[in-house]
Length: 136
Image (cartoon, rainbow, N blue to C red; front, side, top):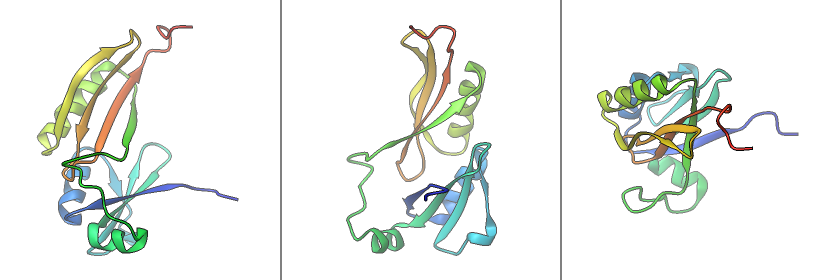
């Protein structure tokens, strides 16, 4: 049965995307890399996100790539261990050239997070969940 899952993201320029994601703290498996794709690790369990240049990924999926200036297909969520980590991450994203489109803020009395877009417009958020304040 299935033992692993990974996410494939279309990007315009693999080198620029790799520089952005490196700047915000993600690492890469250079053994699984070409000029048109990169293998990125996210989190403690090394969740794999493959960055493919748009033309290559479009050939695989045999469907049109979503224009992220007009719509989003999904939001990718990251966990944080504290409010300070959310605040620091938002600044790191800005410094790396990403767009923080939802500033760090509290939500529902127990969530604290922000949302950002990477260089290709993919939507991400990072959340700290204070389970002691979570409604029962």
